[in-house]
Length: 109
Image (tube, rainbow, N blue to C red; front, side, top):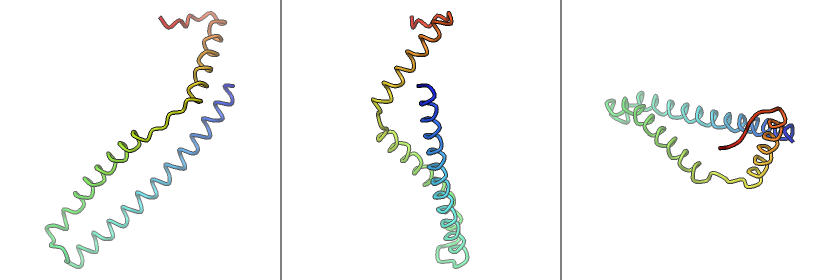
């Protein structure tokens, strides 16, 4: 049972790494696009130079707001897994029994 949970955890970890890499690529592509637009605005003088130099600050603030928004959305959509909760409770009971056999006091008082 513990080996099965370890394999399941390893699969989840590899999925997490893949998902994280997709986000890194997405963020880097956005950064490159924004940088290209910024350099283009600096060279063409469409926007006054005093405003153009503030664009990176606006971008950092916007990125922070986007990050907070994504954390909030992630918390609102956080899944509950009743089956996983039952498996976790079974693992806890198995671990307690194992430790009791080894002479370790695992009372929850």
